[in-house]
Length: 450
Image 1 (tube, one colour):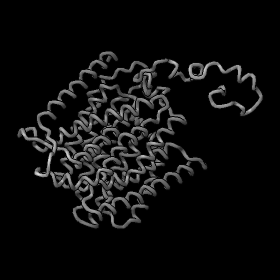
Image 2 (tube, rainbow, N blue to C red):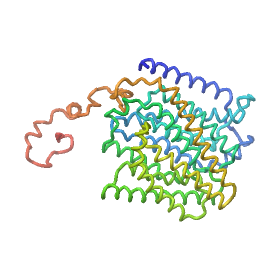
Image 3 (cartoon, rainbow, N blue to C red):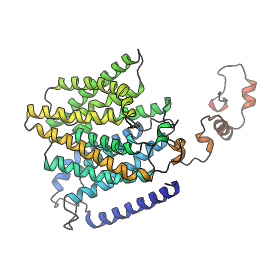
Image 4 (cartoon, rainbow, N blue to C red):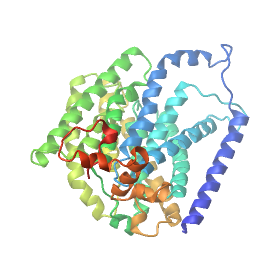
């Protein structure tokens, strides 16, 4: 599809989504004003958990945002797309949630409390994980459609798991991570454009990996909050935090050790960016169930090793079968999400009952997400507007630059122009002091050396 047509359709659809949202919020949403409301007690009870919500909020917008800034020429686009995708996901999650509660059909009203905030953020992080599978390959129109349908499918899957089956998935191994990863992989399968695989822009560099490492650190540090935010009492909260922390430590050590061994004394930054996180994902479904904390260390270490090996070996297989998983969500979120759901069945069978329902929930989430992703990917494939390989993974396609040289691979001309504007001509000073090291009065009097 022609890029101008695709952009025009995106502007129109985005505007329509906001008009629809404004209408439905105007008709159906009410704030909780005072203690006479039936939900007042719930609001009061959750008020002390606001810091946990903020931890999750930061994981979505900062953690995932920076993690998806790993491509050399797509850093600005990656962060910004996470920004707006997350925002529209939260906006429409509240509406779909209200629909399933019956607010639309009975002309009733719905309220939003902190319990809803957390659920909406979980949906947002699932959608941004999905986006990672096809980051840089889809235009804005394709991403918007995939997000809107993805939120609906996520809400349906959530209701099946938690209302119909009564699964226990406190940190979302199956409902958040598995769903997001395989929904994105399904979409990515159909957006497997030949030009995208041949693009020279699908590369990282030192700076982009530094950005992504910031995202990894945010996610790693806040995972204990993520896996414990919806616990019902202080005991479950403490268990979930400790188990998650232990499992994260295990995956960090396991991935670092394996990476050093595989690369003869050096670590691969991709392993540190991704495999170190699998502990939080694997522990998600069973964080508040597992009573033997040493198991968290073992599970984290084993699957930190496995994820590191998978990045090195399985990625090649996926490419051969035609799956271009841009960000490696299969290794970081998909497989660990499934393993976490299956392990939780063992924990639940040991410490409670009905472990089999966890297995059912895991595979239902996998099936809905993958089937939904494949269908959506097939529908939006023809909406792609990329013309050649240089338009993939390229900020120039999405970001306006006042000076074209801002995005030049060789920034020397831009730096010289900037220094002339900021500092004036300082060449005479540098020439007068040539050969004298370190005697510039300050940074503004020192001529940059290239």
